[in-house]
Image (cartoon, each protein chain N blue to C red):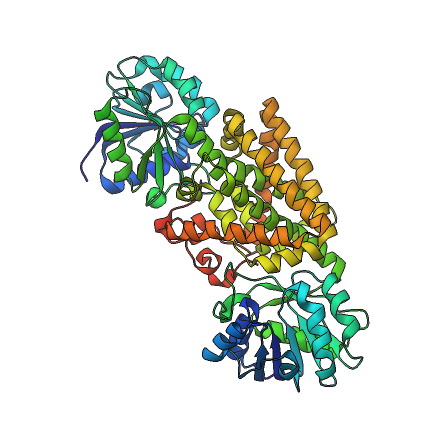
Length: 309
Length: 309
């Protein structure tokens, strides 16, 4: 794989940025990498583990001379970062991001960037429950999707280069317009996460079922909610605040369906429940066929952990 | 491991019964195993793969002379099975089951069993999304919990033997009263499953987001809902019909919490969301510390599948 950018600058050094740094090194996609983070401790760790070639105390220093700037901060912090780096961007620079919401990032960042820069928002659909500069690993993006939402009239050589860059990190690249991205993710990610957070919160509140029992018997299903409910709180707060409309729309449909099933349970309507549960099986098969999950019992968790009821 | 039962009879030959048969063989816990299933095709497959020593066409034949009878049918079928086998049970037989709900099984089965039999209801917290006699494997119960709900004045030698039997299959055994079991499972299993079924149903209904997109981008969180929403529809229909009160109570708490978060999103209350999402992280840590999940990114799914956002 050949060098695609001479100088890549990361603003924010969490799970995604640190995984990108490892994946870039693995494929030799950049000649030089710089980075910065708001927290002095994060910068210190990044220096300690040699995550990138140079760690700067300010975003202004980090972006100087970069031909690719990657914004890896929570969506709510994007505007402030854009204002801060704009005066220091090199001509012709490509600016991208890794935020889980796209229209809000475009609204926050685009107005502040110089005319001679190329802003191409992106969202790699990958992550773990872990955060911080030590949590990254080179394989995070392998065979996963990265969605780019280029604006109207986006510079096509810049878009092509950024696409090859993500493929070089192991990802598959898709193009989409920002509003559609935000709706798709509201269904496949944002609403499921909110529901998981809610269920975990309910279990946490419940007094008659002690924490120890909830944890001890978690493998019966609850466990799978706790992992996605352990993701970074600031990131998810910003996702829900900035993809409000799509999330609320999907949540509305969800509660509508949930009430229908709740009513069926109350009324003892077994036929409705059976029909509903039969229908949902097909989607699972599709996901396995699409190579987006493993068919192994319990996802191939260490077998000693058994599988889920 | 020594032989604990001379003749074990399985009524129903699905995932749990077939996994028990493999685990019993692995540890040499039974001298002889018989089984039956309502479906002729299931019986045929069981004979074909030699799942047990003898497959009978009727439950009456299967239980004759058995010192342990294991009811592995959906909760809704328990009463009919109990009526059918009662006249054919050997004196002093232990009858147990593997149903996900316990009080309803006690109400359905206990009244029909002879006075000289020992009825000790059980629930192994293990399973996969797969069903049928071919889906079983010996390791399913390793390091997983099996909850027994012995009635008042249960024969303690019989209880001790059944406990050793489950430990011999690799499980950890806990004793609990039936109503508490049903509440704990409503929190850790039944309500999470209903919520997962609902979310998958919503995605399935959504017209603007094509199935292909929902499936393609499922690894962003949705995927984890689809697996638990792919479990056996008949089993889950019966769970919700027979653990109605506890499930409805937990569902009520769930929707209450969900509406509070929905309101916070609508009002842009980031502080509330952040506090809530921070609190839920602790439970996750407890589950990993309790050895009920792996800390590997993406549960150690084949790394080429990457990890979840």
